[in-house]
Amino acid sequence: NAGVTQTPKFQVLKTGQSMTLQCAQDMNHNSMYWYRQDPGMGLRLIYYSASEGTTDKGEVPNGYNVSRLNKREFSLRLESAAPSQTSVYFCASSQKPPGQEEAFFGQGTRLTVV
Amino acid sequence: QKEVEQDPGPLSVPEGAIVSLNCTYSNSAFQYFMWYRQYSRKGPELLMYTYSSGNKEDGRFTAQVDKSSKYISLFIRDSQPSDSATYLCAMKILTGGGNKLTFGTGTQLKVEL
Image 1: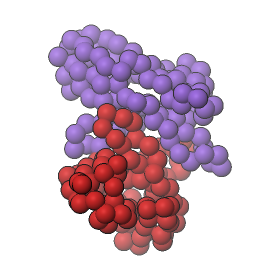
Image 2 (image 1 turned 180 degrees about the vertical axis):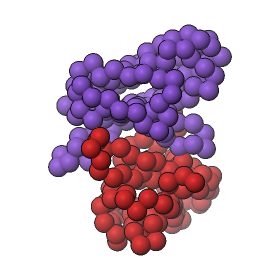
Image 3 (image 1 turned 60 degrees about the horizontal axis):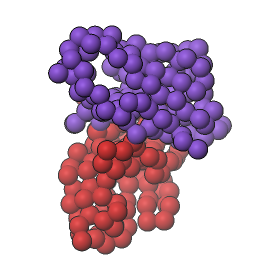
Image 4 (image 1 turned 90 degrees about the vertical axis):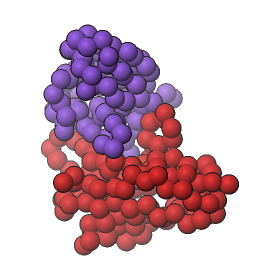
């Protein structure tokens, strides 16, 4: 059971390039999330998807787009990367109550924009 | 002001010490309180979870919530070098849009031999 799988693990982009971060979960969870983690800022929510077919903005959505491709997959796209988007990105999934309360996280994608 | 405040540390303690990690919050709508542990270059993993005010114990770990003071704590007894990690508090309210978590910045803990 793999849990939450993110690809790639590392990426270096030039300013203005685009890329898509992939996330897949095999726990049949309804909800999926994208966070970024920066020193001194903690984990900040970029976008989330409460269920297949729905997406909503989180705390820091500017410069990002997401797609909930199906129940398993939730991708994050940077259309025109900026140095301010250098960060570690985490995907997570969870099940709404009364099921599991826990959010399971992937291993992260370390993105550097130069 | 952030909704959740957490001292980033680093906190360094000798093996066997009792560790106290704390968070304060400003949003009284938070209903569920969690502690996550994050090892270096890994994703966070859930350590403790509690709904209500009071204490919840799990082995060497005790989570404490005081809703009246908007203050939560995590105590680690008999700390071990393997406890060295960053500890993040997290909280959530139920909205129509899913179980969104609000995290503290994390406290870096080092337990030394």
